[in-house]
Image (tube, rainbow, N blue to C red; front, side, top):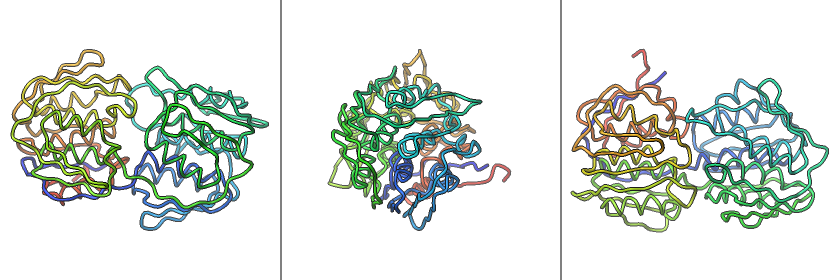
Length: 421
């Protein structure tokens, strides 16, 4: 099990290219199950979660080829039961339910794993499948879904903490081959949902309204193969922007989509950072004085919960008192205890974190608890005094492709070692 050793106090300067979106690539790869023809997916990031998804597709009977960020999948003959050994490692594995149900009218998948950041139920997915005409049962930790046919209907996906992204993806994939028209109300509006819809449309699906709160799907009899390029990863882009805010002189992101990061760019501008954007690039130039801010996480286009931990790391170094309210995943604050080990002054009251900034954090041994928390600890360590040892960095490999190498190319000093070394 690897760990990262971060030598703090080095400035970042230069350019970094952003990879393809993990949260787009996973459901898009799952959607290749909807056709017997070959699909070609480009700009697929090299991440452990992607590896797990490709393994699942292979186990289901797909022909899978991968080379230099391009994945080809041909799902001519497939099984409908996913192996527990792989599914348990990744929460997003649940997104194979929709395409399996849509094409084969059957799916059996073990309850998924992944980040441990509180309760993320899939009840809305299952209720949506039932509304389409499927029968859902839980058997020994497995989700078993069967249908004789699927019929379009109106499905509301508003959950306790807002719309569900994977739920929107799953219902959309199940509905594209259903009889009649399906209307998804309170659909997630994330760019990744739009990306999946655009891929499905290339395959022959009839989908309108992706990116709005109402998606209309007119069922078709079959889909065909297609080629698609995954959009840039806005969370990776946001993480590097915050790295530039914490330790940068001037950092430019290439191959990104600035409009996908509007809420973060507004927050960074409010802090006092200089931001310039072009069509596919963003440059961040820190100023001497930074101001505290108050914000809350919200469904897109609001501030992304997946950037909350990273922003916490930045606010720990800004003089004054800042607050962050987590409205999506109330338990997503496990990184605070580790930031406190580095000297951060943070108080947590329910879903409200109050952060009193200090001039500089101190290096310390810390433990990553989930994907975004691990990124936050790396960012905090960049400007800390001394050396920070971050354990369990396998979390970070789930969502960031070579983040240590990319930061080193900007001027950081990060070593990756085995835990025994």
